[in-house]
Amino acid sequence: MCYAIPGKVLELDGKKVTVDYFGEKKTAINEITSLKLGDYIYAQGGYVIQTVPEKEAIEVLETWKELFFELREKDLRLSKIDHAATGVDKGFTLILDKANEGRDLTRQELLTLLKTEKPPELDLLYRTANFLRQKHLSNSCCVHGIIEFSNYCQHDCAYCGIRQGNSDVQRYRMTDEEILEAADEAIEKHGFKALVLQSGEDPGRPVDWLIGIIKEIKRRHAVLIFVSVGEVGPVGLAGLYEAGVRGVLTRFETSNPRLFAKLHCGDKLEDRVAEIKAAYSLGYLVATGGLIGLPGQTIEDLLNDILLAKELKAEMYTFGPVLPNGPKSDLVLKVLAVARIVDPDNAKIVVTTGFETLDPNARRLGLLAGASSVMLNVTPLKYRRLYNIYPNRAHLEESIEGQIRETLDLLYSLGRAPTDLGVGQ
Image (cartoon, rainbow, N blue to C red; front, side, top):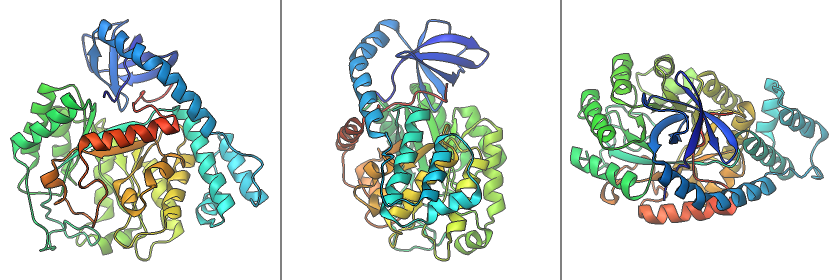
């Protein structure tokens, strides 16, 4: 199964290309010097990652065409808003009407959305976020694979199960060949076009080593690569970008400096934010966000987290619950929905594995509340269960094939196409 739909290049303007997908025009960044008008390409995360032979592209498009329009019609039906909702305060409805019209909401209006506990208002909030997702991103849903290659970490973050001070963790480091084999399988056998390489901040796997791994994956495959390995500094970021990495997943965890200091012994929020800003300035796609349900965290903190993610120009918003004693599902859904309202036309909002661990229906609920991205775990099973950042993680024992089958069934039931159509019109 391929997780991208080929598109035809209509315009070339420096590194910016305009691509046609079934009549929709999208833009992407191109780094392939030989690309020319009329070529067919695959794009992920707004980057052209591969040209596709015309015959192969047309065959894929013929296979997809009927299904694509069926899915889009289903998505349109599901994303309609019921304006006859009862039990919803008029002021609450006016706030959501303002969001639908594309006007910025005030801080107080956003707090009103986050604070509601009334089921009819929650339902309307989620429907509004889903409507905005469909309006701006159509029915595309990014499907990325993640390889967790080491659970060693030199930090002692209070919320993390693989923190250095947890002596109960059985530590592992995947070998170079194991990582390359896992990437080969995900890309060649299962058709992933985007991978996240993740670990703790492992001094036994320094940046220079990771650069070598990235270069070999890029030599073998056309794929969009994200890294999630903590802070690597400006030199590390520059080296990884040169090697072919185009995305970083670095959560700031909380925008509250007091909470951050309490959770991260000896670390500073300002340093984490500086790292994320440095990544963006180098041209990286930024994936960032925070934890929901931290002790002492307020609704105001959660709003500040969402606003900080937007300020950091996040391409991908990743907000998940603190586990094992997580918050209620509705609090997570409210954060996802308000993130969509704050950044309606840009945000790729992830339904995290943490949320799926908290609530077995999280993926469906999240995708109907403004989310537009999922990650499947392609770490070898013998290591996956050891990356124990919180207990009883979802998908620990599921095969890649099983995860794909379950994901596609869900996406098709919601009218979503498992693809990334670029960075906007």
